[in-house]
Amino acid sequence: MKKFVMAALGGTLAGMVVTTQVAAPLLAQESEQSADVYEQLDLFGDIFERIRAQYVEEVEVDELIEAAIDGMLTSLDPHSSYLSPDDAAQMRVQTRGEFGGLGIEVTQEEGFVKVVSPIDGTPADQAGIEAGDFITHVDGDSILGLTLDSAVDLMRGPVGSEIVITVVREGEDEPFDVSIIRDTIKLTAARARLQDRAVVLRVTTFNDQTMPNLEAGLNEQLEEAGGIDNIDGIVLDLRNNPGGLLTQAIKVSDAFLEKGEIVSTRGRDPEDGERFNATPGDLAEGKPIVVLINGGSASASEIVAGALQDHRRAIVVGTKSFGKGSVQTVMPLRQDGAMRLTTARYYTPSGRSIQSLGVSPDIVVEQPRIRPGEDDAEDEARNRRSEADLRGSLNNDSLSEDELRQIEEDRAKAEAAAELREEDYQLAYAVDILKGLSALAPQQ
Image (cartoon, rainbow, N blue to C red; front, side):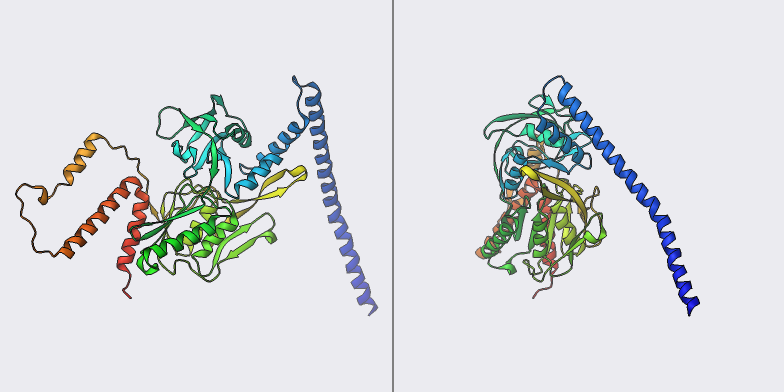
């Protein structure tokens, strides 16, 4: 018994010795890292003092410190940044859906300011700014080399004032100037309309209004159609939607899913990951859904498109989305400022990370740039000629008045569909998909 106790004690002592031998280098390494951090902070203090005392012009201490903080955050990724008290207040207003500006969502790519998407109905949208445009100058001054926040500050200004931005666009040989009048941006987060027998839900952003707007708009259009049995399905238009609140993306996805995972987030610590699941209930009651995306669909838009695609609840049509698969957390700081920090990546239900890859549509449909000329108009008119246009053609006297009326109605619908293809080819394609699915569905 004594031997056993001694053996046990010996094992314990040996373990203690080994632990001490392993822990000592770790403690030394941690202490060395801490010393390096303090040395770097001392270096920062030295540089700060020299700038404050010897820079060619007097500098504002507060602005210098804010610039240093912002530089530290923006060096991490394009979406982390420092928000001054004014910027933080403006961000809180934006999430409520009303703010002043041009109406564009921008990011930074290799030092250039890139348009993620213009927002529907805003001055930038009306001026013809497109997703993928690069902004190089503001009022003639180059913004190359500025931080994203600094470039955005140059584009801000009083409502009603004019700004001239220089744009570089793929397919255009030379940069060109665009004049825009700043305005108060009032976002209608979601709008609904009937297109033939499809309800088109246009979601422009994900803010506090998104889900209430979407649900109210859908119910209104279903009532106008005479009930859900009188529609072929729903087109969820997320094109040029730069994203927004994760909570709203989850709610919109949940609105059309009965069960299953919507999205998961994973941070540095695996224990910090979260999974969000759908709850029973489908606003569309099983009707087919087509989701429209393009290169301006980012972040929350990609969460919705990815979730509905993975669950095979919707057909995704359009072009590859933007590829922003990271989650930013806004953390309040002292003096009413805030820090926007990338804290996690999000993953679709199948485990896909969309970061830098985007959502690939099930059916790739480009939006053609239509530039009709006089010859095109003549060709179109020639192609529309029929037997009825020939002089002396025979009349069709075999149809009743009701049959003739039905033919005229069908012809009007066909002409409206043709006009839609000219105006918005991707949307027309989505509506045609729903028509085809409805035609193939078993009759009740």
